[in-house]
Image (cartoon, rainbow, N blue to C red):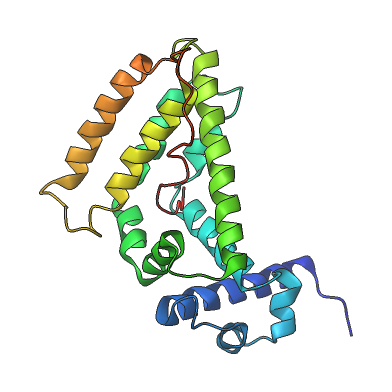
Length: 228
């Protein structure tokens, strides 16, 4: 049997991811099997295992792909680059990107509901929980590095409380991404969110360390998809 080219392998992987998007959206995570995805993609289960360890890895790869497609992660990664001269500006763009029409369509799509169920813990497969936890930790580390980068570039004071700032931004983002879920969406919600983000970034420099206080725990990891 001739060896597949890299291009052919990538094409098969994309077929699998497209099929997974469709089946997860229709059936949810728990009710979807790899056989369902293989049938929809027109490939064997073995072909799926060639590219993905299991169903959990496939969903997480799909989440990352959607975040990239809707630019829900790029600004954050760039903000963490030590060579970036405006990390705070990119952090603000990252926050605001979640209010775009494209992002809102993703959050309210069937796949968005599946992802929300994963983050809510209603999808209970251990392998999936572990991978989602790893994704959140990775995102939290990038966010923390971005805030430290803003300190290093003197956009924030040297005694800025990095953990508190990360928690603050995460709470704001998480709240916005859940307004539809709880029925709190206000008229002209996007403008309200932008004004709120403007206010938050104007006040970030006020969040400074208190040497006598050592907090336990963090709000990091609570934001939606993020997809971010």
